Image (cartoon, rainbow, N blue to C red; front, side):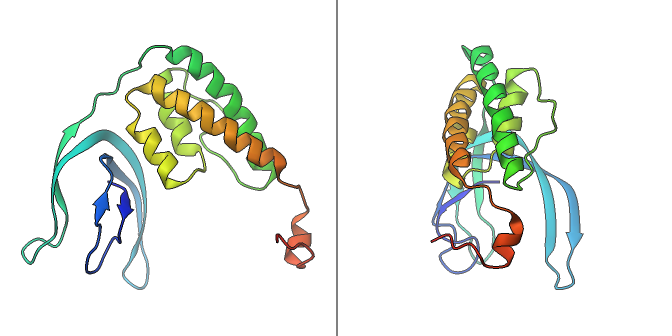
Length: 177
């Protein structure tokens, strides 16, 4: 899987610019819809750098690329960042719950910094650019440092949201403008 930074997934002129780093994906579940499309649940795997890509042509309708696997290293200071991320993610999960958004992973976060960095990165509800920055981090310590900053930002945003009963939204008593 590689993120599309500019352009479209399909059609003429598709995928004008793709991200420099992607990851393999393992399909966990697949459900076919009546119209022939599929709903897939995938789990990310090994990260890789895109070295060279070939655009689709008449013979091959898919983008192809040469890639280099990226190492998974812990990096310096990972334990310190891991503790900060665990605390901030606990607050984040609770604030999301209060606004009606369940957060994964399960209550018990991984103890090791490397799997923790991926679990928290996958669970955060942030935009594609932030997700890409997390994926491109050189090692777990850098990913955790970035995650700690994102969690700090997101916790501030969530803390500033008003807590209103859902019924008020459904009855159109609340205008977000």
